Length: 87
Figure (tube, rainbow, N blue to C red):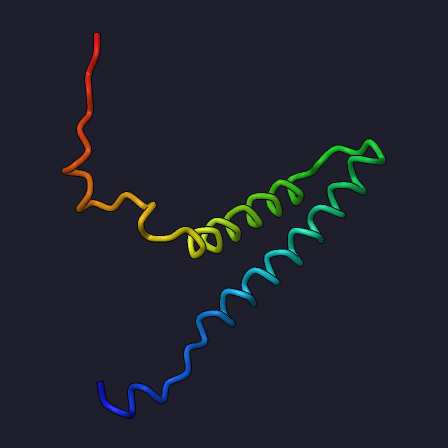
């Protein structure tokens, strides 16, 4: 590597912390919203379901960053997996 490549700062940890902080903020907001609605015995409307689905879709990529690549089954490992068919 050249000296120019070594001068680029690694912003990966800050990016992960920022994503988790925003995810937690959104989760707290959604949790308080659902708590207020359900504690007053109100039904959840389409916008609540939309918010739940978007928070889940936000959390899945953030969780994927934390899982080490050793635990993920990729296409190159599929040939090693043997499926046993039993009757």
